[in-house]
Image 1: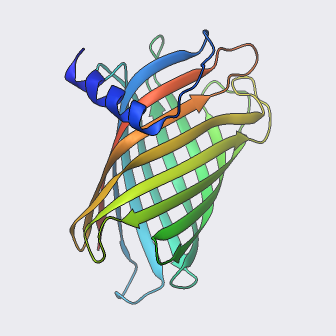
Image 2: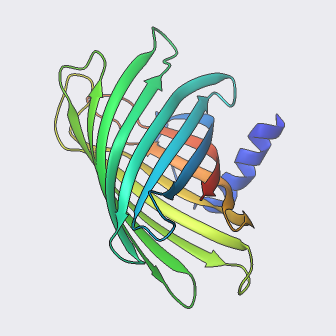
Length: 230
């Protein structure tokens, strides 16, 4: 077993409950890396902020590039716990067969967080309009993420993180069907390297139920994020 496969296997056993998966479920091992950067628009105390996310995702371990995403956005802090905003994502997909496909994605989202004695609960609701090359029209997608972060020690830099996000298509197109597109469940560790830099590493389980006769798919993902805040 290659080292990469061994890491994913250990993480999967630690996170996932035993399950009798259908024999026809297709599986793959993948690596995701993201670099989210954000800062204030104007003064440090301005409620307006900008963000820029760079995302690279591979398939078959690290053997093939699957998608590359550039996602600029802006948002407004309604309070210390809630914000609203939106932006644009340019997504390039590199299928195993055929030429690269381009997606233009507009989105808006609302975020909310609630600190507590045991950690911080966060919610993110996002609506997207996806225009994908060779599709017969745009498709709407609803995304709901729930996330909980629990510090390992009071005032410490390390935290245990758990999250789940469901993604639902709101209409039918020639390439994509209406209904639940996928679910992403994550468990990992977050480390505040500096006051403005945070590293997050963990296991993400990505499950596609399958539509229009397609087999269900499950990806075992080693997910890493380095976040910068100014």
